[in-house]
Image 1 (cartoon, helix red, strand yellow):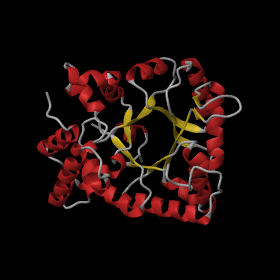
Image 2 (cartoon, rainbow, N blue to C red):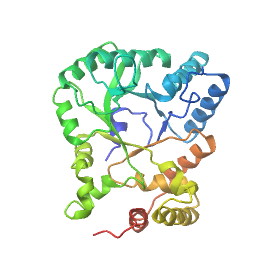
Image 3 (spheres, one colour):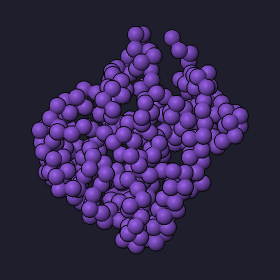
Image 4 (cartoon, rainbow, N blue to C red):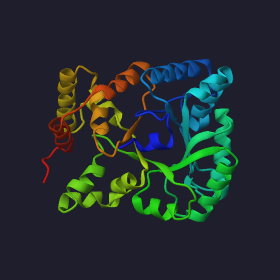
Length: 322
């Protein structure tokens, strides 16, 4: 089966680089040369392991992550042609008009997308995702915003983030083009997406009910499942705090052992576990450290056995399967 996003975007990579850590802190300090050097090094490391998709959001470091890329594109115009850009909109911080909120109105989607284009210093993004579900979302308004942005050549493809299958179905009924991605938190430390299937018929599955058939729906409709937080803060690759649950430390030990057996960094095992799933999940790695990005790239060389995959799953759950 072809990788879903590869079918829509022929140059999409199996891994994606999340850019939330670029541009400095979440403050009003301007982007400086140090931030640009950090971004340049992260991009080079990502591209060295075959990553072509770079994931942004309008809110990341208060817009500075996008500005960092925009300044690099200004200095190196050809750099834009070497990558696919994805960004998100729909989260608004508290201001004079109201509290922190989600906004998927027609006006805000268009306004936010155009502001991202300005910060990124580009005439289009390859994918625009709706960042969080807005309970006031009107699918017809979203469809109109998408149509305007697409017709103007400003956005080529659209997707969602943090939405379940019911929300996706409701939105898709009004859209004139398919959604290409759904970005969700999925990792060895966030297992409800798996437990929703393996434990749905017993008490252990009660907390997973919101997932319903989200995994299966995205697979059936060719919607790329993207995983945010796939490294789980590094807990399973050597950075677990001393007070982390026992299951975390036990799984980190297992990851380390498997990494030694496969001859790869620990990050590669953590990501290879996600990559083995038949949904062809695309991890969006959040680190911007070049050495760790390269370590993540080694995941593409790992073929975990079924037994190894289940060892990791059961260990991370902290209890046997039903």
